[in-house]
Image (cartoon, rainbow, N blue to C red):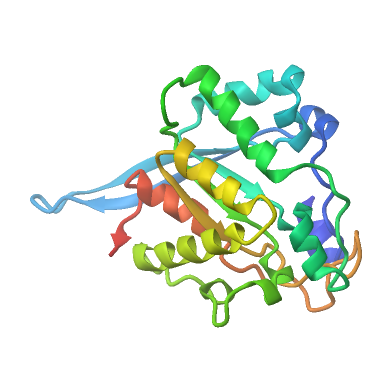
Length: 245
């Protein structure tokens, strides 16, 4: 389905609303296998990891009556990837106005992060939430003028055979600084740092170029950038892949 829309017809995907999340979207399950070799015996085996991707609607996070389904998945989650839409932030929208098609304003991004924390606290009470959180700023292709000169976000990650920790830390620092400059940005950064004991900031572009309209992709095609970073960080966090320091 995604291939038809994106690559065959050059069309954007529908956003995930509450009805679509409930009736049309099932969790995606993947089994990952990683070869391992014993240093003592030389014996080889496969380490297996199961990943479950569940996409939810923003309104479900903010609506207490719709949190039941989401809460069950979050309660069982070993890690969370929260994708933040910068084009929903007023100061960012003003800065990029005219640079491309802007989505309709739907949800306050700070309230959504706070909503996720509230749902998690229902099953995991405590001073700070220990579930690892990858907070991802999407659509970096639309933020060219808001990113620092020579930003690491504009080049592919050097994660060849391992998660490159120094690169990940540089991305974390840059994205945190960028968010800090937005409307309510300092509040968002402080909330994440004070609420989630294990977190990291990321920036990525799923398309590589902003869409030319609300439903039409750029004629330059699709060239994802750094979309693998959050998942690699989580895999490294759980020792499923090595870390290069």
